[in-house]
Length: 184
Image (cartoon, rainbow, N blue to C red; front, top):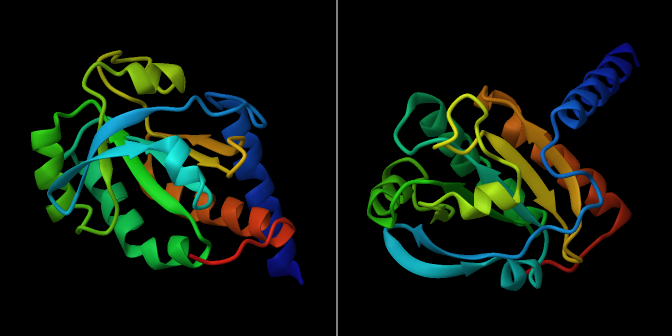
């Protein structure tokens, strides 16, 4: 009982902390975007609108491919991809990197498990208020959970990559309990 209460308190604190630094607010409609993306080194056009037709989307912004924190985060998302798929969710990472860089990153660090999209002019990051304040040429480490109607149900900004996967999975599980969806 104590462990369950402690876990609930930690999750609530995490949500509260996330809300204090939230980029776009909860309940806000996610700005639609289409961008060049790479999955396993293969380039394609990623459309948020199309992805949402299949289920929730975890959209995460990260500063730069092949940096320490971004590599850790990519590995964490790759390791958890089966959990996301079990929840009917798509994961997409977005950075300012070129598609050529992301072709390599998608294979080596994302392990060909989920796509990463190129946002070289940071236009998508700006729409999502995900610009790193100290270095405006980079995206901040911000994760969003967006549900099929386009609403943002969770957002978390923290340069430490360690909680982005756990937090987005928890948000998806909570949403799924209230909104069971057929699996793909």
